[in-house]
Length: 109
Length: 151
Image (cartoon, rainbow over the protein chains, first blue to last red):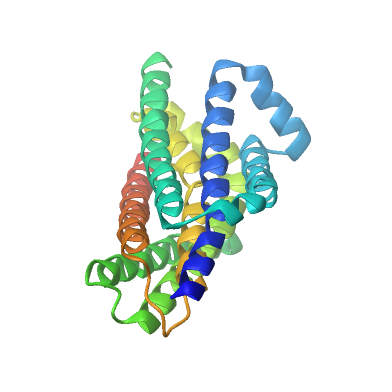
């Protein structure tokens, strides 16, 4: 039981890292639609804007995971559940936000 | 379209469906209390691998072919919103899936077979698997709409 709790605690870092990655994708996408120059920069740096968003999201995920590892020592099941909650609702809101963004962009074009 | 790109596209679709199916199995396994832990591990790992395969094969098709050849056809056709809304939404939300799938799978695989998932984690994993299934299904529908718009 103690080992299971300890192992569960370790999960906080990747859960929050995934949350950060989703936020990064959403932010990059919104900025890209509002500032075309940013999309061009991504294309120049990564040969395609979508590859750039994926690469930056992956980098954000890995860096966040590493930076958040020390927080695992403070974790208990309650904090893990909070991390899960953040991940789930970030995924939901980001999905809806992008749907709204592209609905507006589609009507405009 | 070359035969190689056709193969990539077919694998992208089939792997995406298989990945969604994997997490569908995991979802219902979790809802039933995660009693069949071996199956849960297999379902989540299969789902993750299939989603990653779908990600890579979709990326090849999208980056090398879709933008230059398919997108102009859709934008010039009677359903330009199929790209402006469906494809744009799909290609960006698709970037969420590997991270969601990876974290769910890591959590499941971190628990020893003899132990149990804490109740709170089990419930949230269920919600997240449900989200993955919903996004996978929505993307499959969007892909169908996009393909239809080309014709």
